[in-house]
Amino acid sequence: MVHCMHIAPASNEGLCTYETRGMMCRAIYVVGGRNDTTYLDHVEKYDLKFCTWSTVAPLPKPLRCTTAVSYCGCLYVFGGETTSEIVNTAYKLVLTAIKWSCCVTLI
Image 1 (cartoon, rainbow, N blue to C red):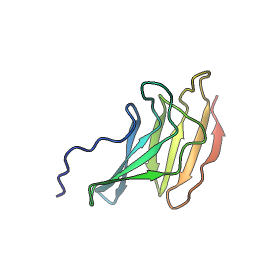
Image 2: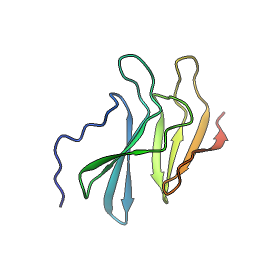
Image 3: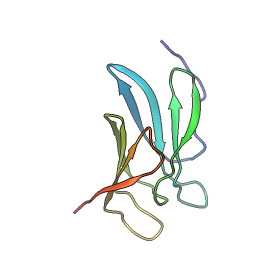
């Protein structure tokens, strides 16, 4: 069992999701969000085994209020908002890659 303390990402209000392998939780992802002055395109990963943060490929645009899930080696981010619009797009990141792709436009 791994116990880690003080696991705060750089962003203030990112959405969290987690990655599992079998029944073991391996990582927590913090996606987008906002700080005091701007919306963020940051994606950060917390490795539960090594208790370390790392930066993942940034979102295609700064977003907050998204929904995200890690599934079969990919990170999916759905919807959200920018400073000027509600976003109706789903994005996919293969976790071994460094570039996001657009999956689908949501209704």
